[in-house]
Structure formats: C-alpha cells, structure tokens
Image 1 (spheres, rainbow, N blue to C red):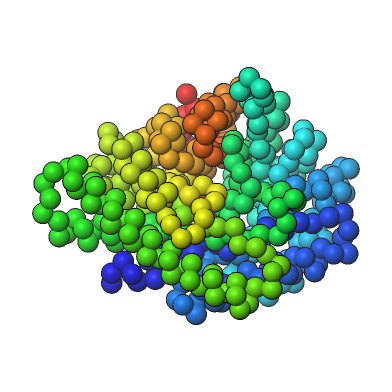
Image 2: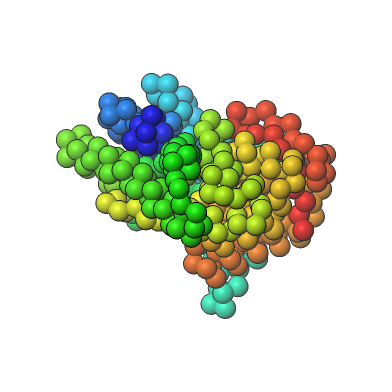
Length: 413
C-alpha cells in the first residue's frame, strides 16, 4: 500500500447547507432534495473508491423556521423533521442534522431539552461575537454555560454535550458538527470534509523507515513536504470528481463552496498521537508538541485547486481519538496544553470531559480564554465541554456512545 491508496483518505462527510422557512409544507421537499444530493455525490465518490462516511444537512438559524414560542412548539416542529429524516433511504450512510445556531438567551434555553429528545438530529451551536472594544459577549457565554450544565444533568452520562458547541470567530459552512451553521443569504451550498489520519501515518511511517537524514530541520522539512504532496494528491482526485459531478449531475440546487482539509480523527482511524510520535515527539503533550502542531497546520493549509472552508486545520478531539483519550489517562497533557496548541492550530477545546461539579464561573472563564485567542489570532476556535455528573478530575468516564472514547476527566484550572 502506498499513499495513493484511496482507503487512506476517507471523506468524513458530504455536507449540504440549506435554507428553511416557516412554511412547513416545503420542508419535506427541501430536506429530501438535500439528502438526495448528498447520496448522489457520495455514490460518485464511491465509484472512484473514496468512502463517504456520513451525509449531513445543516440549516439556517433554527429560529427562522422552527416555532420557538416555547419548548412544546419547538419540539413539535422538530418531531416533524425527525419523521421526514427517518423516511429517507440513506443506503446505509449515517444521516446527521444540524438545526443551525441559537442567537438569543431564549433560544439557547430550548437546546438542552431538544438535544435530550432528538440527539444527533439536533446538533446546534452558539456564535459568540466581540464588541467594538474586542470584548466577548459575556451574556451569550453565560447562557451557553447554563445550557452545557443542563445538558450534562439531563442526558445520560452527560453525553448530550456531544451535540452542542460554542463557536468563536467561526464562519458559516463548517462541515463538521456541531459547529456547523448556515446563513440564509448564502443560499444552498455544499462542502466536503476529509478524514486523513491514516494517510498521515502511512506517509510518515514510510519516510521514517527509509530516510537517512540526520539533520532534524531537514527531516521536518521533508516530512512536511511529503505530507503536503500526499494530501494534495487526494485533493486533486476529489477535485476532479466534484468537477465532473457539477458538470453532469448537479442541477444547480447546491453550489460547491469548498473542502475542509482537517484531519478529523475518529475512533475508527489512526490516532493523531501516532502522527505526533512519527514526527519525533515522544508523546502528545511532550516538548515539541507545539512545533509539530504548527507543522501539521501548515500541511492542511497548503492545499491548492479547491477553496478551503471551515477549520481546515488540526483537530484534537479528546474523546473521539483513542490515543488522545489514553493520553488523559496517562497524564500526558491537560487543558492548558490544549489551549496552547490551539494558538498554532485548532480546534479549541473539543469534547473535553471535566468534573461534573465544575463551577459555572470556571467554565465561562475557560470559554472566554478560548474566545479571546480566537479573535486575537483571527482563527476559528470552539469549546465543547462534557461536565460528567458525579466524576472528579482523574476519574474515568463510562461513555456508551459509539462516537466517544472513555478517558480521564481533566481538571479545569
């Protein structure tokens, strides 16, 4: 197997972004149209041996189409959408749905119960802005903390926070959940998101097994070049498939907006920890982790031919990566480490388990630190925390979700 093997570069998602209105009579047609589009494009990728792992549908802000008068009306409308989604024949592909962003305290207050009832069909986010003095919107942060705390209490093992995140300096058209949201004025769009840890590991392993370079600087330079070339090879293949698809199959309903080149690790692929080790870092969290993070970010940003959207950077999702999860057990890194690495990469604090009794003020301060970095460094960062009921720092989670790895709870400094 060489780096050109298409099984090394999976497509985590084909994500459509559509606009829904208050006219419920149109929802079925619009959602079916988005699903059909995703499935058709996924089939075209499959014909060229690229595996699409999920199809995702993202809407404009949910207050623009759901009846948010109260919880009951919002639940009724989402139940209507759930029925529509359940009727879709997905050819075995996982369908995920994001209801867009919550913009007000009232809308945020609806999310815990909606997430509890609808789970992965109710991914949602809050976008926290800054004011003219570059100060973060503290009210939105505090309301978001309340939502995180309530989700932790009313969902099993607090796993519902998998479907909720707080965004800082994030633009529309992120294909990965739950940071995804859409602006109505953009119309219908689509984005392709990658999953490449297996590819990174293959390239670095082959290089390390054959390289005779002794100079560390030259070695890192060569590793970066080879990683960029391998990623670009697959991006070029994907670009060709998309070009042909848009010419022959796309009837103009959804406009291509770009790709998210992020590594996007999961439980079912190589760990990013292995990538760090192959770059010469003893373990993720050891000295050298910042340099390696910056190198990998440069690789993801080096892509040509297709426009980059979303994060297009290094994702370090603690409970979605087996190696990172083990690192919490081994005490290899902490929340401060993750914040430090976010300065040179992404994604912020993603799927981080914290003690269930963490004070709200600490969670808010952690969000504020992340948000400050995002705007100061002009990069997208998110916070997706898992306060785990009944657990303290160092104790092990007992998650049952197929998406989550069990790990040690991290202390909030």
